[in-house]
Image (tube, rainbow, N blue to C red; front, top):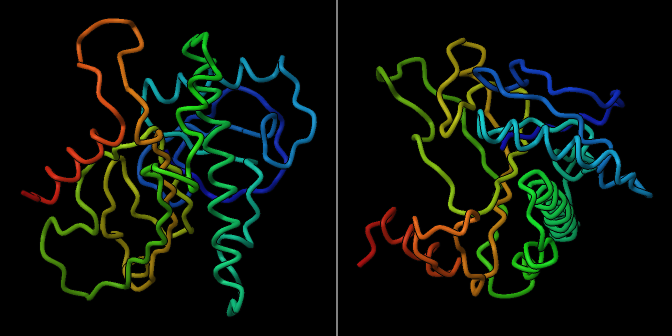
Length: 236
């Protein structure tokens, strides 16, 4: 999923299908204000339409751009040196964890999962116990004037967890599953910054098919992550 900071107020309505800022291609834009981290009382009647729109975006594109999610931009792009870097980073991790749980809950609603407490409890140890969730800060430096044909910044890939939050600046390059080099000279001269939060189930959570089939055998989240990392890095 693709996220960018936008703290403005927008009327909640249908998904807007347009090119999200800093991306190439069309990614649905969804107003998350009805379940924002800044919102106090939550109107249950507003959550189901939001859940339906979220599942629509994930099932057709696989990505969604959220507006009004409630994470302050000061935690992402500080304007000065930060002697309290560790504290701010931990705050950002916790805000990302909270937002991830809200998105996962809406996914459960949209998929008509009846046992919502079990779904959320499978992600209860993000940042506190055996769980593969991690937050990474990323910087792509400016590129030289001479770039090989087909050169990219990050190759095509898929992530291994439940969802991924990507917070980014305004520099273009993000495409579905990869990051390319900007086509314009100005874009190539500018560093690209982003922050990714990879939300995983707890290591001992058993992953099974939602439809009750045996298409994929049950596996724990920890073992699945280990298999994917082993295959990716060819670790014997």
